[in-house]
Image (cartoon, rainbow, N blue to C red):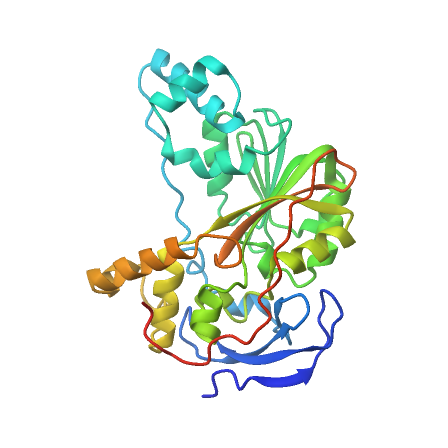
Length: 360
């Protein structure tokens, strides 16, 4: 099996139209088929992109297996009505970053189970419980249900792989494509590890532009090419997830896409997890992450010695910084919004590691 070949050639970048870059051959390893797929990293914007999308994308999403590792943290349990009222006020202070009295309560009795939601909503100028929220690529709808349990009232999810549409209370799940939805404007459009699965990201962001309210925002969490895990593991970087991930963006390629759609990046939050390093190390050892024949996946941490897992955690913390983190959350707003754009670091366009050396 050829791992990447590092073939310099002229290919057309679908983000910036540059023709220079490096071609890589990447294996499908989440389910261990080991089929190979060609990718191209643009030398200008840094985006790593699948050259030939599969004719039948659904064939690469085994039923019931793809979201197995995407568990959501639980909500704090409800108690008496009075204490539940206090929890709601505390959570509102955490989510919306306002309310002096209950902000003090939040500092004294934090709720770590909603830290990810607070990060998503913290830069929205008009976040509130009645805001219109759309989750693109919603999967099972677990995140929308969490938001509903916290008190949000207008929640819609769309995912072409749902099977059938359904409604439960204030949560609507639509088995459809984003660009097929009826016209409606939203306060928040979110994509949690969905954008990298989309074959036409520029068209998607233009749809976002047409569906955002004037003060609305789009929140996109994706893996990004960087000097961290991509440079360390090369074609064994688990976040490539061939052929399901069409684009592995850099900050620069995201900026190009956003501006071409009439949007701007107003905030970037970097993320780094031991999972990325551990899964990539499995691939480097020619071990798949998942086995579609098993009803339950083996916990990833149990597949390594304690010292190895600690090394992965240390690597994740080391790389939790701009230019090095393997994931990022981008907050986008309309270009006309009265918000400043963030400074974008230069993309990592040098060739990724060719060697399958021990992570440490």
